[in-house]
Amino acid sequence: MVLRVRLLPRLLLLPSTHTSTPLRPSRLPRRLSFSARFSALSHLAVPQDVEQSDNEGAPHGDVQVKLPLDRLFVPPGATVDVGDQEAVSARVLKGSNIVLGPYARGDAHVVNADFVKSSVRPDDCPRDGLPEFALVGRSNVGKSSLLNSLVRRKRLALTSKKPGKTQCINHFKVNDSWYLVDLPGYGYASAPQEARTNWDEFTRNYFLSRENLVSVFLLIDASIPAKKIDLDYASWLGQNKVPMTLVFTKCDKRKKKKNGGRRPEENVETFQGLIREYFEAAPPWIMTSSVTNQGRDEILLHMSQLRNYWLKH
Ligand code: GDP
Image (cartoon, rainbow, N blue to C red; front, top):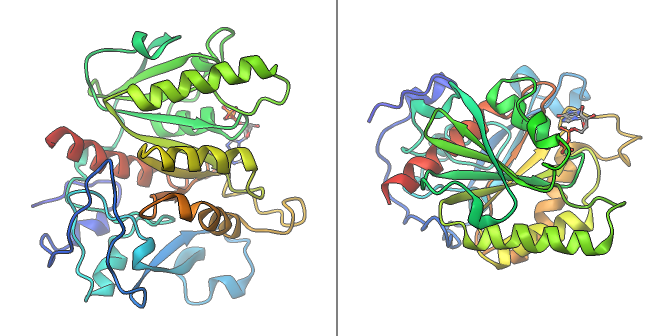
């Protein structure tokens, strides 16, 4: 099969067949049975201002991190050859634990994106059955910035910030064929308890009832240590078997002292450790920055492979 992936040309060199490791169903992933001794290299894209010791041997300021294979996310429909670590490493999307499989297509990039509607109840959402990805995160996590970066429009997500729309489910149609969904931010310190409970119930209903929801993209600020509310959110999704991708935002922010002395990669690692017990298999995660556009093309490829698999099954 020929992958028409413009965004990451090196992936064109991928072998098209691999000796198989069993696939995971999309909604209920199970743990892969790799030996933990196998590992794949993941390039974590880190800006050039990181100390040299972090960069040793890694090209273009990347930090190479060895991920045990049981912590990689192998998408449904993909297989990996556990005997060929180099081939597996070549297929891990940069700054993530996500293996690129055969369902990633040339349809990854965004050609057009339009605001469609704001809904106040899950029942009011579009009913055309197109696949969708929901973005959710604490207020100020960088959700609007990421949405704008994904669609390469400076102000599209402003729609979600208009008075009266911040507590709505906002649908944006991409390439006339799938949706990006902006959900209300959580964790507004100033909101009354009653309002917070209502939003929670509203979004939880959406997660549990929306049949064309392919994956939730839970945004976590990687420039600060993990917050309890984010851990609670991730564990709730895990326990309820709602497919989830962790999107770590603001990975360009590296002022160590200001961030409690920890780098984004360290916060990412800590977060994984804290939620591991709630997931049967490692959820996909990816590091991003809306300032440098780190992770943007990779997220779109990941969405493409999940979407194309979902459409076929
Ligand atoms: P939202 O409330 O989740 O929609 O967050 P916004 O997208 O409005 O961003 C909140 C603040 O974080 C703004 O000041 C943004 O400029 C800033 N911000 C968002 N994304 C990034 C990022 O990737 N890197 C940095 N350094 N700042 C960001």
